[in-house]
Image (cartoon, rainbow, N blue to C red; front, side):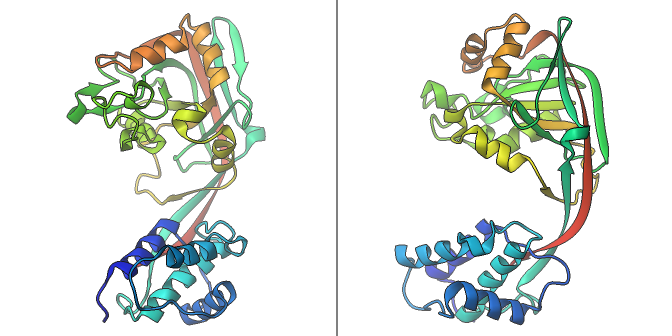
Length: 323
């Protein structure tokens, strides 16, 4: 078996990065590899000589990012082509499959929110605000149930929603948020302040990622979690959020069927969040400034209560990773 040199490591990392998958009943490995690689790569094989080069990486990226691979999502035909391409390159390099296969099966669940049968409503001092799906906010749930609902959940602003002992930082300190809806800023405190002594300054840490914020909200017992979208701290526009958070959502099958997660996880547009802060007697700019300082404490959004119902379809599928 060849040594795993730098060039091979690059392709392996690229393989994991694209996170490929394929549906059950897909073509055999050899058949899929030969057809996908020949179609996408013109039948050419990867050179086994030399180190990582811009040209070599660009070739793989160009193939995998092409329209023919349809976004490379797990359990789709594009995902099947992707895993076949990567396995084909491994095979050409002489890597031996693990246990006779280049693939590892993963059980997946796909959920799709039915917007017509779902809602997110905020009651603010006698005024009801129904947030429009896609345009005002997007939401989903990790709970694998046809319907997930909650009613009159008190809303709380928790700054960046971070608990980081190594940075002496706890945005949840002093308040039990069990049963509450937490409202969270995107990124982490060092970004807007440009203060290198706060986390990693303008270099986002894992605490700044939306995945962490929803995980922490669940650990704190929140019923729902809403991240306020802002283009610059998020590093992408609302269109990216809307496109990635609507339609089919894939996740690994969890032993607890998502019961440990908040009932609702979602994003809200900045202008609508600003209006909600105002309805609670708060100024969002002042709250953001306070959240950037060590010692911040969560702030109840007085008078605001969130209610929601999520109806969704559920489909279980198999995906395969390249190993």
